[in-house]
Image 1 (cartoon, helix red, strand yellow):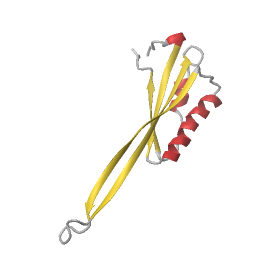
Image 2 (tube, one colour; image 1 turned 30 degrees about the vertical axis):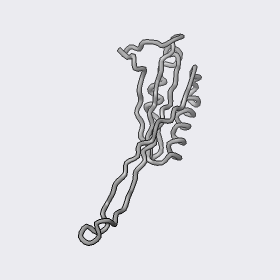
Image 3 (tube, helix red, strand yellow; image 1 turned 120 degrees about the horizontal axis):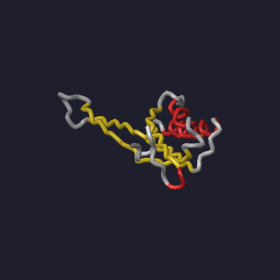
Length: 119
């Protein structure tokens, strides 16, 4: 796997986190940043970007035979964030492995994007 380097010889890694509770998501993004610093890496730049929430609404009839106007509404909100890290690939070759072995809380899912200019 080869990487094209961005400006100043840095490679960009994005960790996308999503979950149904915003508190768990904030804690997970802090965990990602702490893990990078505990591993001894000093990235050139790190960012946390909050993405728009996705809201799904369900409408259910309470009584399908008698009263058609009686309905209940339920919604599910999906929160998501990006943690973006720019680092020098030559200095920290094992950064991606460190992020892949990251242990997050039970309500949070993650995906790792390595520099979109990967050949």
